[in-house]
Length: 258
Length: 308
Image (cartoon, rainbow over all chains, first blue to last red; front, side, top):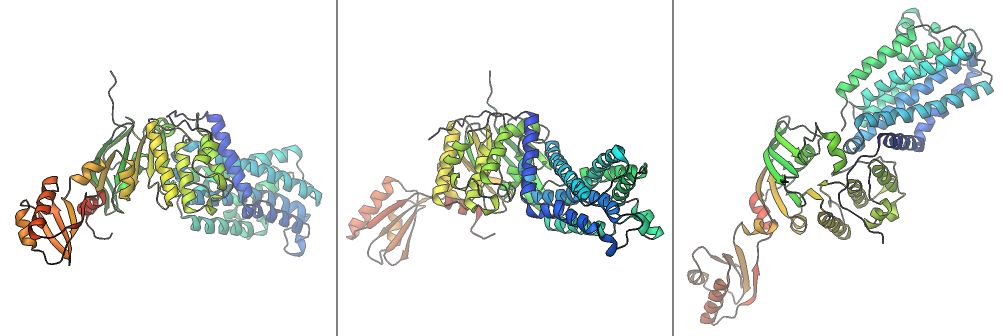
């Protein structure tokens, strides 16, 4: 039997390895969760496939259905991971005392957040790559060239910032069950009526102006504009930044660790 | 010259939750290298006190120093040096036991050998079981392992043996004992007298948010009411006469026919008086049993017997 040297020898691991370990752990747990997979890949993939025939279900407007729906599905992928998954996972970490316990470990609190962001970013990259490839297989014809993909990266980062901050705002203040309900509800509501998948021009005039100021409308419409070959302009960038900043400050003030 | 400062100093701590005062002017010191038990009934303020020491709560009044530092302001320095076992939870529901412990180890610079620790606490068989499927006892042992894996100087264990079977409880006690030998200071909460008696150098009995008695388990047990002598003999002895023969503040009671209890300061003289009195009556006192008061007697005496 190996002996244990129990004499005190405290010390924190180096910051780099500590952050890597935390991000890897978060990623592993995210990937192990079946419901998350449904949210992050299965639903967006179904929408893509249905998107090829979406004109038979709902009129998304002029143009090929797959070209209209693909940017929206990419936006949905960002929403599902940075908002819904993050909020639910964090809500239950709070409930099970994981945040509390890690708060007493050498990992600083900002390190916990970095670990989460790291896991979210890795999942999103995988989602966007898979979805973009499948979309092209079923006929997506992106316009706008490399510049459009540049916009995809920028808007995905800003969308993650805005939605991630909102997700943490919910997870840090509501009970885990309430977070679960709200995070899923918001996902469905924004998917159907938040300007994420359906182009804003299909909404009535007044609604349209409200929706373009929502992070979902900004991200969805921004990506549709980018892949239509016309630049999305500054509005979605500003909208996402403002949502992220406001939600971020609110989260910082209200987040409860247990 | 090195001055030994207390590992933990709590001075006049007051903590309120709304209208409820959980901790009400609590003070205690913990000497380095000792095992200290905070013993008290449910709701006495044990967890609030320990969690304030862990830096989870800010003292509303009074002060807390841990290893000479402020648990909140100096958290970054303290966290690697202080091992924490929460009363419950602390792990992801889907994480495997071994994975969780390994993760905790990876956050420390000089962690214990994880395999040896797993073996030591009998967690080998459930290493790949998700946390939510572990038994309560396995979760407790994992939580203890997580507290010690970083080789802390100071350990806070909140009800470390709640829900453990006797084997696991003894394994926990043995580990805490070994940690003390290795120079680790341990502060634990418990409402098991037996645990406080078996494990700790110093016991603080806490009730209604204050320390109402402190000392070694033996000191505490002895400082209370008198010891007792029980014996059996034929029913109907003249207890009044026996009481006259015994020292002044001694009481004799025939609890059931033929079963007598003497409460008082029990010393060899008292026993001699008893046996000679019996001899004079032509009575044989059988099953003479001297009972030392236990910590539990003392605890109930101090905190009352009302359920809470």
